[in-house]
Each structure stands twice: as C-alpha cells, then as structure tokens.
Length: 238
Image (cartoon, rainbow, N blue to C red; front, side):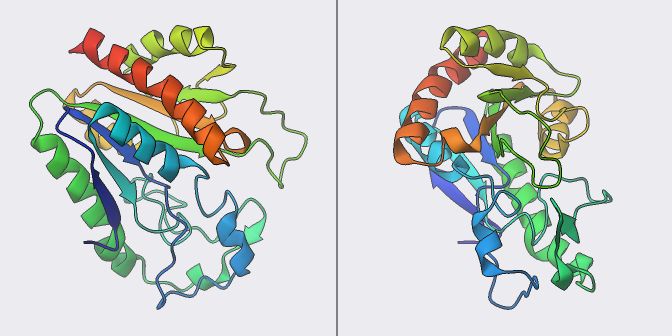
C-alpha cells in the first residue's frame, strides 16, 4: 500500500493504464486552505477517471496505476521543475495552504513514489503500451465563454502513432473527438513524455468530458468504447 498511488492488478496484459489525477484525497496532515466542497470539483480531481480506469483494467486484463492524492496536493502530471507543480491558484480559486508548503516534502512523499511505480510496472513488461486517462471540465469558471464541445480529446507530444489510429475509431464510435483538444499534449504531457516518449513506448492519451463520465452509465459507455480501441492501437504498434 502507498499513499502516493493505488495499483490495480487487473491482469498480465502488457498494457498499463495510467491515471495521474484519479483521486481527490488530501492527507489529514495537509491543509490546502480551501472549502472542502472544492474537492468534488474538476480542480481537485479528474472526475470519472478512477471508475473508467478500473472498468478498463478488468475488461482488458491489465494493470492500472491511479494517482493517490488530489492534483491540488501535488500535480503528478508536471515536470519536477514546472510551474503549477504545487498549485496556488486553480480556475480562479486560491489554494492558500500551498503558498508556504514544502515542495521537497511533497515531491518525496508523492511525486517520486508514483513515478517510480509507473517505471517499475513498465520495466516488468516485455512490450509495453500505455493508456493515459484524464478528463476535462466542459466549462471553466475562469473562462465561461470558452466552448468545449468535444466528447473526448486525444493528446500527444511528438509521438502521434496511436493518436492517428484512435481518432478515426473514436469518431466511428459516435464521439466528437478533439485532436490535441481541449489541451495540447505538447504542453501538458509530462507523465507520457517521461515514461512513454522518452523510452520509445507507444501510448494513447485520452481526455474524457467530465459530464459524460460522472455516473456509472457514462463510465461504462466510455470504457466499453475505449477498451477495444486501446487494444487495436496496441496490436498495430506492437
């Protein structure tokens, strides 16, 4: 057991599901200085990701690793020297408790163990493939005029091999697909840059719209669509 991550041993398939922002947990000894209700919002957690990842792990028969703390405690999908690693603002909300927090302590306690576990799981695979699972809010409080009509986004940096396979398949499944939307993997791809692109490991990075995966029916719908597509990407790139 680790407070830095939850590991799901869904099976032996050489495919690793990675969910950086799957948890809203804040350890009892950390005070973020925010209204507790915000821990249910998108600034604290990628809504629906833990549930979809667990369904996919069972469906595909593969392991999954879920981040164990809220992105407000430390953002596991940031480089170790990146701004926003320890957020002091998020979508218009001040995270006052982080202003004087010990970044080194948070890194040693959460960031390092999480990434070491991702690396260890990949090292144990003969021909690894990574499925990176995130979700996005359809509406930012700090930019309400920004339209986010996509059902799912596909993110990547330099390695777009799986993205090029997945996008037409997701569209054929009836989804409105954002290519590098609502975020660009060239900017927000730290975990995949580190574990996939730096090591030549193929990966598919997806970002689901949170209102579509906020209940059990939506979570199952997306897992049922994403699973076969991830397997198709893996088989074509093996």
